[in-house]
Image 1 (cartoon, rainbow, N blue to C red):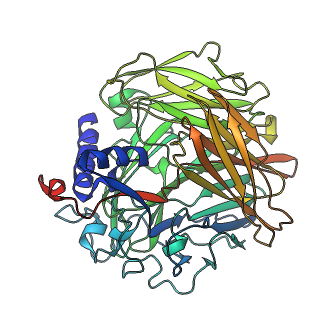
Image 2: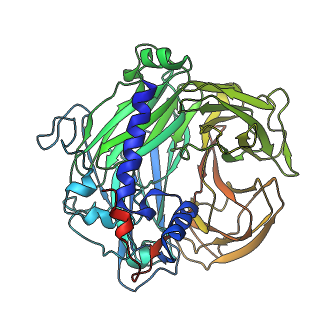
Length: 549
């Protein structure tokens, strides 16, 4: 089974390699790859796509949305809007598809009109020089927009209490595309999942990792698969358990195959239907074999509340989980080494004063293909920190891992849950929308060298003017603080983080809201917004890109 999983990943990489350098890699890797081909310039993206999952089916839930794009994008014409998506059954075929994908193996972005290939935020197509607004945009055939931006630099808010509120898909182009972000925050008054549930609407892609998921009794984890394009997507769900290859197979690895997600539609899948018996800790790998989707997990617990579990950073030899709250009462770390080799990791906490190793958990051995979890009791002692996982020994052959942490606050019946997945550093800029005057904390981690960062608050959705501050981060530390607020602002606002100099910076934002004696909270990591892309010079010979086709 492990060989099958690895072969799927290898095919994904091979297909992506044909589509272009910028489509495959993280920003720093793209720049390096571009250098190997010749001189390349970084240019603003011209189109972005986002998907937001269905917020809640509870009759006592209220959901607030806030959309924002920083100023400075190219051009004067453009727009950004989200439209309702339809809900589909995971077993229903779409447009005559049998759920097994196209016979030629092409993704939706390759087999349709090609307009989705102009989406600058897609991992399989990022052309900053391409136009926008083609036939494959998410809004086609979905009526009036639910939420649209009128100008960059000013957030726009909306809300709903409809228990049948749909998922949303949409695009931004022109000056609205670089850094477009949407926050979805739901308050659930009672029942399973009660508390504060938040997620940043996500970029569609073809592979997602979710450490920290569960099919345990008393917990319901739904993965929401949302297709923004005009052709069906076909998705496989792979589950990994703690007992290795054989146990993972019994626990559902290889099940959930060939799920068809119709165009402009969303499919929720309950993970416990994929396992013959409850499994406390699992890692979900979402593999899209045709098309692309957005994917998020909504986790609800009868006793511990709930939250959205966002995708973790792609597998790598080291991972950083920024912004564990200062009053966390329990932290459960979940790690998987998806390759064929065991991983030995150093576990450290980058806090206010530097990096320390948690007593009794200085190292972690992760067997290949097995989910390894550890409860880091007493990890947080009154100050926020960031978990830093790194190879126990130096070398270029360290196995890759994925990681996430479940964080609890409160005690007894007043406990509440949030998740902190590993994330990528802020190369240039990242933005968190939906901040409020009270209960917002920004965490910035510099696990290697020191760094200087500019933090800017946008105007409020009800007015005001932006406000900025410069923050200096010491090496190996995490700084958690209340971000600046807009001057004379009203309503929610966005916070933009810009790395000015120094080493890698990782960021997250925590929202907190008191409700019926329970301190609800949610954490969103802030990866780089990928507002620019490396574009080779036009005079350059690009035939090297197609030599292996």
